[in-house]
Length: 297
View: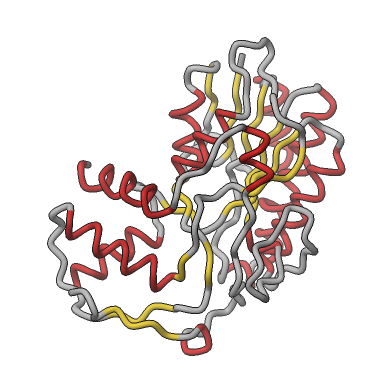
């Protein structure tokens, strides 16, 4: 059985390849092998390979750049999932789609639930919400995992940026009023695999179709995340120029960006935990695992 993973070279896509290689024949074409911005090319690829499962980890994730490239963001974040969902519905196969905390308005301090009102603040968030809605309305078997602050031992992400800056500088100022849960790509892929029954043929989802929040337990700010990265990295023997106490917190208004970020990215996790019968791990432990992998490379 063919398992089609879009964005296979990205952080989440790479980890999905690791997890699903035992489930079937994984197809994870590079952007040179399949241009996801070309709808006709995607249709042709689907017709040729006839996947039994689609894992859509491809997305336009340059949040600030999306403000000036809305058409490109819409294609990858809204039109591509709609296209994949239409194929999945027609061929009665499951589709997993990955979404974001940016679909919510980002105000208050209460964790968002899957049925909380959506009101994205940016082009990125708006196009991701359009993708969620297209998948939901398609009628296909689907899981939509909304996650937050994704990072990994590979690729470009906040953890690796902090480690680089921590070697180069002895002081940093990091935003401290955006609150969420840093989520490693590895955890996203592991939870996705848990949602499937690999011994069934064809592959099938064994939890109800719908939207689920997928993140570790706990919460922190970007400033808190950075501080924990430095503390754990130093404990692992990483040589950093930065010292404890030299990472200062600043409000979002002092770090303006083209795209508005949500201040509240807290997400309630009970729906996913109940469906899978698990307790999701805390974010600090997940960071330790990811840092260990990074330091061993």
